[in-house]
Length: 102
Image 1: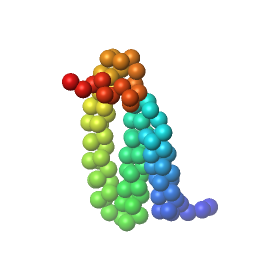
Image 2: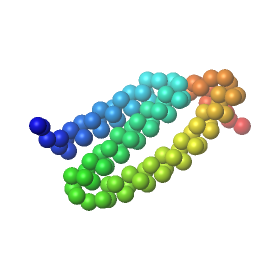
Image 3: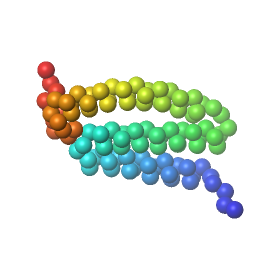
């Protein structure tokens, strides 16, 4: 049986972050970009929890609770903006964001 070490968690976290970054850079759909940002946020959470676990302190896990709280507020505001854009333009592409100016 193999032991799962800190480096395994960090590799998975880095791969998830890279996948999220790739989604943000290459996609033009706001919803896909939003999900990619959430993936990047969760990869950072995975790294914090794994560091916290392997250092035997709770500082990283407490920080994750704050990040999840901020992410919940981000979801509410971000999805409201995406819905407003979709109602106005019937599209959720990044290029249509300039139409939201007053």
